[in-house]
Length: 167
View 1 (cartoon, rainbow, N blue to C red):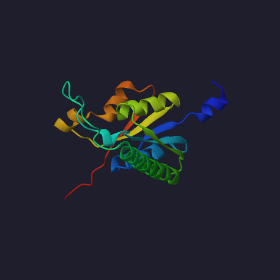
View 2 (cartoon, rainbow, N blue to C red; view 1 turned 30 degrees about the vertical axis):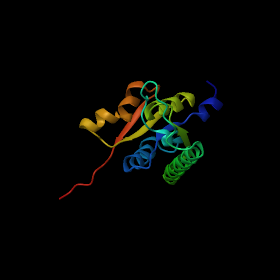
View 3 (tube, rainbow, N blue to C red; view 1 turned 120 degrees about the horizontal axis):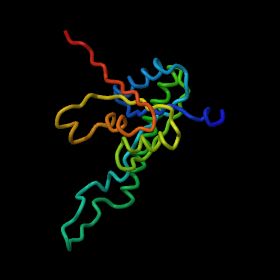
View 4 (spheres, one colour; view 1 turned 45 degrees about the vertical axis):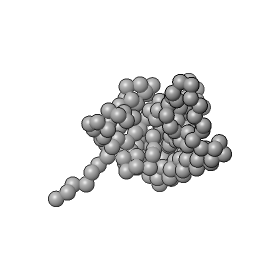
C-alpha cells in the first residue's frame, strides 16, 4: 500500500447523537490522538412505508402514505441524520480530530451499514458507544456493538456510557 492510500484511511466513529456516542468521540480523541476520523450516522429510508410486512393473500393494501409524503419523510430523516453527523464531526474537531461527517442510509441494519462503510473506506478501526441495553430489549433490538465486534474487518473500540454516581 502506498502512502497516498494510507493517508486516505481513517477511523470510523459510529455517531447517533446519544450520550454514549458523544463519549465514544471523546474516548477516540483520548485514545487515538490527532487522526483522521469519519463520523458516520446511519439513517433509515422508507420510514413512512413502515407497516405490515406481508398482506393477506389476495388482498390489495393501498400505500399507507402518498409517495410525495414518503419522499418528504425520507428527506427530513436524511436531513436530521446529516445534522447529527455534522454535530459529531464538530465535536470530534473540537477535540483535535480531523473529522469528516457522513450520513448514510441503512442497508439492512445499523451494524451492517457501519461495517460496509468501514470496509469500503478500509478503516483502521471502528469506535462505537454502548448504552449497555440488557435483557429483553437487547434481544429484540440486537446490539450494534456486539455485531461490530463479531464481524468487523478491523479493530473495534466499544466505549460504555458512563453513568453519574448517585449518592
